[in-house]
Length: 181
Image (spheres, rainbow, N blue to C red):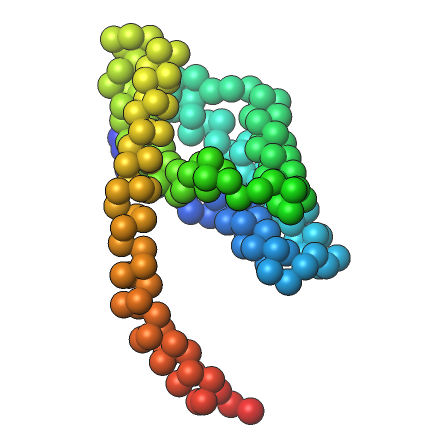
């Protein structure tokens, strides 16, 4: 087992393929697809498959079990496939209130799932079993994500943008003026 040292935790670089995929998806939506963007998206997918394999040992050490490599790779293919499908079907899936609400849950859920979710799973599993704990923690994390998204993020979004945008625009214009030719 781990002593909880920072070096034992997954590092940001393990998630780099997913961040790169998100950035490339935004680029494709904004600028259209290109061979280069699609090749880089494919590379991000292949790197994500490599990184998911490195998580097996970490899961084993922290949870006492881990899905098999084949199961992890299959889950990665499904997640990346859903993401790719959403990217391809973006013009056919209307931004309904439900779709927008689900999209609003993703970032708070991302922030909460590893630290808070792991803590709660470890605390609840011995008392109620791992599958009941998983269901309870999933419900709690989705509820917390909803509260964060709609009662914290949404109300402060516009004031925060109006506060930060003018200084950012001024800094960008200064950078453009001082850029070497």
